[in-house]
Length: 231
Image (cartoon, rainbow, N blue to C red; front, side):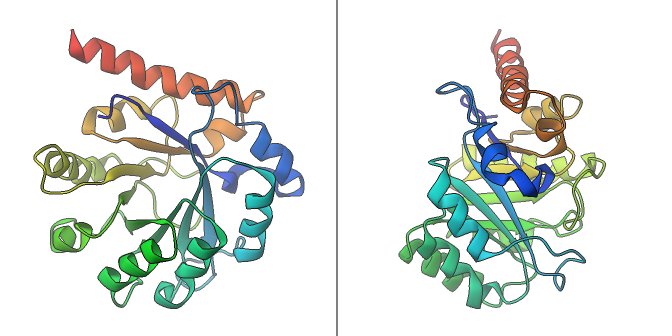
């Protein structure tokens, strides 16, 4: 696991009618609030749900200085993803199952100014994409089926996290290992033990009375685990 855990609240669980306020609510004190803001873009084709797109991302970029972590659950990301990078997103993640040329797409995203992320669904194996991942900055391991918030954590995906962590630690890959789906106070330690660097949390943060405090609680859990592991 990373020494400095990254917590990325997912606005999929936020109140869309109060989006600017919901974004501000996770900022928290310096170094303790949200590190990234996770933005789920869904097109009702790649996944059976429709959320938001580039205009909303552009509006968010104008209202917050939190780095936007845009997770594109869309068809044809080769065409659409670079627009999010050009708009100013910090990290743009595409699904390997949807990209026609993921290596070229990573290069295009970086050229447009963002980090490049590659997401894999729970049933997608890691091994065929190791060489592709050498071109990426982030690996997003989905621990639920993409498309809807509030799903139950699929612990079986942690085997992929462990493999990725080993490849990062041995220098075969140079990327952030991120996990998305069902992360809360009951599951975050399992994910941290497996080697996750960045934890996406939706309802665990936005269902809380104090979202910034919920972010702090998740961070403290990972830090306490790291301290116990070192002893």
